[in-house]
Length: 419
Image 1 (spheres, helix red, strand yellow):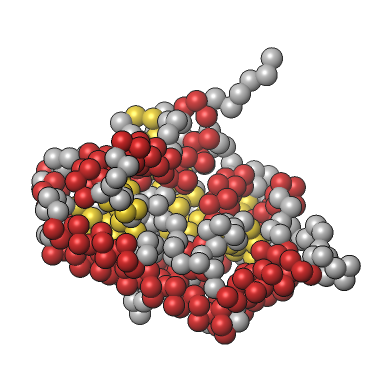
Image 2: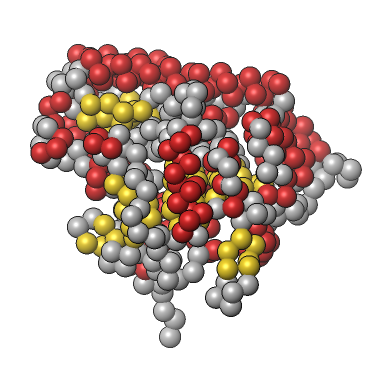
């Protein structure tokens, strides 16, 4: 008799962003005359730049010729793109430990974050930040490492609590954990770690034989001088860390789908038999078995991002979204909200003054605050509790909407009922 993976039955049915979309759709249907400004999902609003469109069109035309046609490509990604990544994203930043052989092109960070659990043993201990991107938790639960859900937390996971008291920065565990998910600049809080703070995590991983999964999707938003752009700026990080990046929030590839994961050749762990195993070779084997690679057309578009025109386009995109985030942050601060982020990140993490004293617990839950913002100001946000129990009472705003819509949202915040 066929049996299903019962871990799917253990996981709550609704995914955070699906629930936001469901509630938003219901509100719009009931209030068709009201304009709702979406400050929730992290999708982008700037169209693809000319340099990208031209590359897509040229690659499409190539595919229609005998000499330019490309069928199955390398599962790791075409060398023309991987060499550009190694040069511009690493060597130009003084990182010479990462080469094309360490880089695997994918269809985005979310996929690789979910797929990397294939590398983990069944009995390892996983640590995640609370709050944190839901994929870190959900994919491990689906793989059977979650244990039981008790009061919003999974018994099989270690939660690294991030609260105002510690500046929303996780503290290094006091006990040993095997895999640690870190995302900096952080989604959802927008917080970034400086060099010395990040070194603590690398040192911990070296000492305990742990693996760091470093989600670096928002690296391009970093402007603070002492914040590393890559975990590999920290000495010996290539021995303990995997880094995952995406072109979605930098170049508008949310609908094009392309990113990459760095699995350094220096990253080795012992098997049960005591032999050293290369995680790079394991990931290569996994991708070769389960993945056929990213399309040639998409990879040519990604390659165009490393031209002078492409790099300038990315700088302009980042400046646009960061301006939106900065304006949002300023408007919320004026209304006496507790505000985090919006400096090295496109996200603004906020707790309203009217929601009570944080240390004593919020008077409104995150979902109640979501509904209040939607009904009173016609602004859609992301409920903080969807990222973890520590985030109850908080909401996340995104700087990814248009400048014009951001101004409208700010006007509503400044003149609305919510304080």
